[in-house]
Length: 101
Image (cartoon, rainbow, N blue to C red):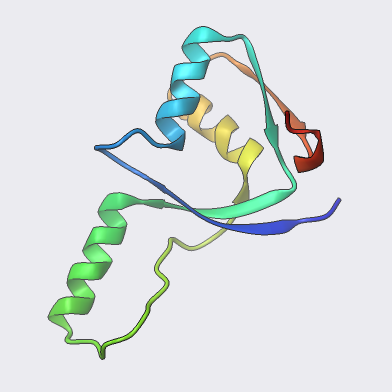
């Protein structure tokens, strides 16, 4: 299996995000296919905001910063965790990106 780093998954309150989309699907479907050959670092918006505030207060030098939570997960495992946490019953089938419709 080829693992491709796909970047961050930012989720939180406000605009619709990946977590909201999966929860919506779980109320409409019994099964979903999600890629497992891409990994990301899910980052909660509250953690991201707190880190930005910490950096501003600490007067960090001007520049570009990459901020995300630690760890990584593939998209299908992240989807399973979302559904498990919210106690939703939907089957998640792992596929590779080239099989995604």
